[in-house]
Amino acid sequence: MTTKNSKVYWKTNLKYLAILLIIWFTVSFLFGIVLAEPLNQFHLAGFPLGFWFAHQGAIYTFVILIFIYVYLMNRLDKKFDVDEI
Image 1 (spheres, rainbow, N blue to C red):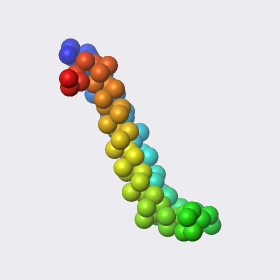
Image 2: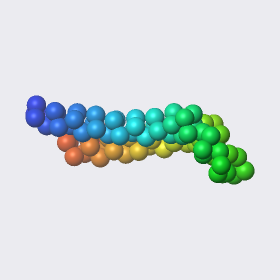
Image 3: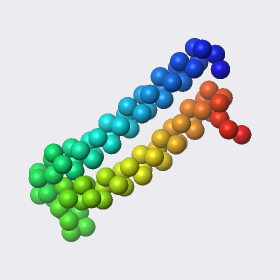
Image 4: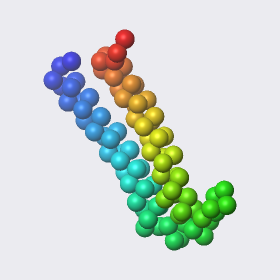
């Protein structure tokens, strides 16, 4: 991989990380803590939505973000021909 390609590769990787970390922060901190009271007006599976985000929604989101990151990185690796065979 050339130096130019490696810079583009890492810039794209950091962009993916930033977007996923923003989603993680939004779900865990904002929905689970800061906005819990307004979200508690709504219910999901019989639980207030703020409570659900703090206890289960954040965990589901984390697992989904892991799979999304793996997918994005595999696609990026193939694009730059650094994927595993």
